[in-house]
Length: 128
Image (cartoon, rainbow, N blue to C red):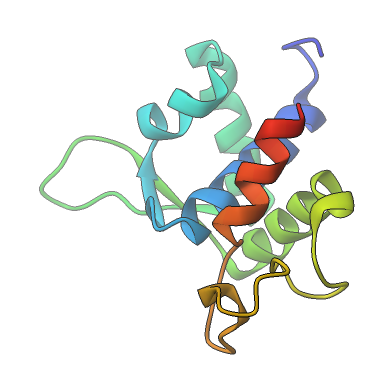
């Protein structure tokens, strides 16, 4: 996929941030933390994040004492990220409406569980 496709990268960022949130890697992340998984040119990452902020999928969440830009998903961004994640991992999800595995003892079956089961991530990674 070309790095010049803005829609592709918007989807990737939303999906990645949804995954990071679900894995406990952070609800609020720096662009550097996000880019560790995406490996985008800095200008492209910055432009795409700015577009997602304008679309109300991300919001800036920089701590007042820091000078490092941080972003987080908005409620709309969470829904969009979840949708894109489900589309990407559709064939690997255990249930139609939840991102859970087939192990009944896994934490992902808890009604309060948010995010994506780590078993699904591992299974997907091993198949690619």
